[in-house]
Length: 376
Image 1 (cartoon, rainbow, N blue to C red):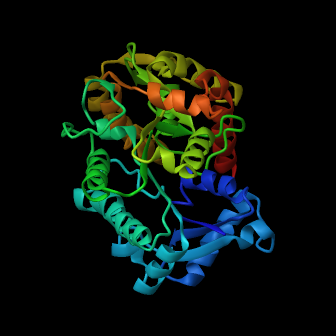
Image 2: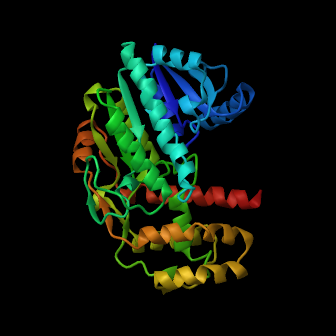
Image 3: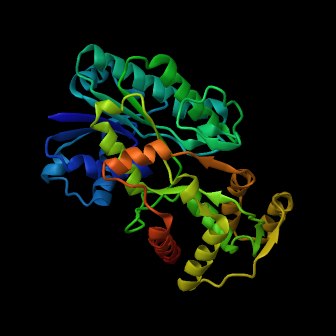
């Protein structure tokens, strides 16, 4: 049996990886789910089985081996006996778990990024000593480029020290832990950009930053007041392609040491003006009445956010709280080089998809769920 230890199965990327791993009849997945006890973990797994379209009694579901723990605890919150078992049984490790909250206290950000990375390295080191470990794939983020201007290279980044938020800073620290303490281990690091839904269906486990941005670009939350977008572009990538790329790399020890940028790259990034046009068109097709847009400088919009919040509804106020970090990203010109990664995956039959081919289903899926949620 080919045993895989997977963290983050309930997240955006991990939830897309599980069905791909289960396609191989010889693969068993050791799922780490955040839960205080086995009963709570079983309840979470039941919900995930429904998401994956699996019945608990079918053969694929039987190859899911459930572990309950917590990535913010040493050793993932697992007992020493269970860690020993995982090390002895699992030949592959895929670490997807993370918190994507942007402005956590730094100690909390480290607990969700750095500590689990160190736990991962200890587990991998033990598996390597037993002669069992073949591959480790760790999901990072292009956010480790921080506030650095220009084109992000596909390499280690020891020179980067300024970040937009604690999430980026902690993920950068986690990468440094990999380079400092992971010597000799078969590790591949993956840096996704802004992950959106499946390119064919738009389906995703979670609606994250991209969808908050689309709400703002529609103008509906801010009575038409939006930042001046200029010529900025946004790098997005569909979750199914990200999952395909990680799945492919996790089976290939020859990718050890690689840093893959799972992104659209400078040529494929989506201009924000075009995104806004498509967002407003999609909102209109779903029956939403939108205000006339009134672009203002970002600094003025930041000052207006509290004012808008006083007259907006509770839903809009919650959405507005996510606006300052988004404005910080939109204020800078950044791009992420993916030339080497794109060539590698194209040669493997996984060319980077064009955003024009998946933006419509991504927006439609979100709006359909948004409407259904409002009606329930």
